[in-house]
Image (tube, rainbow, N blue to C red):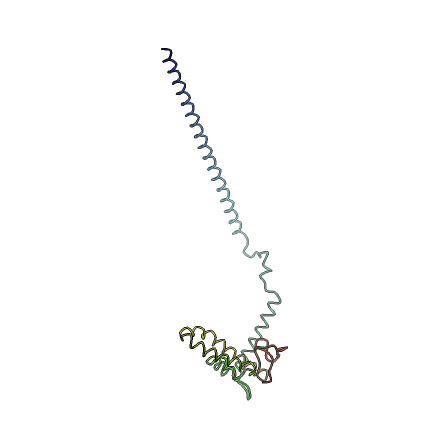
Length: 211
């Protein structure tokens, strides 16, 4: 009989311990849930404060006078050197325009003929107004390269290249003619002359050649 009583009391103590452990676990879960709720509320409050600050900054920025000059406005203004370069380019463009509008005189080269020959025939057209010292080698090289490439590549692959190179060749022919008329003789666009002829102009090429 005493053994049964001891067993009953042991079971009661085990049940009480289990109940106590369950209560402690419940309290722990409730405490963790409370901490999570408080953390979420704090994060929401911080986000709300940040949003209010951004809105206040936007309102103050919109309320700023429109004629206010930013601190770095001086950096955006063109400098004296920039204005001088722009004026120099404008003068050179005006000179070129006047040269193109002027009818060629006796002994001068027609820029229209020079540009057309150079556009349709490449460096071969440079022979019309350019220095023979550089146009003859360029023309020979052009013919050799054109002959080799035409045998290797089909015509439809050469067309995009020619659409880029031929306009550039036409511009070179134009410059040759203008330089010839200004210098009174054939000029070189490439080479290692010591100085440029002022009659030709800095945009147009090298000094005169005796060819």
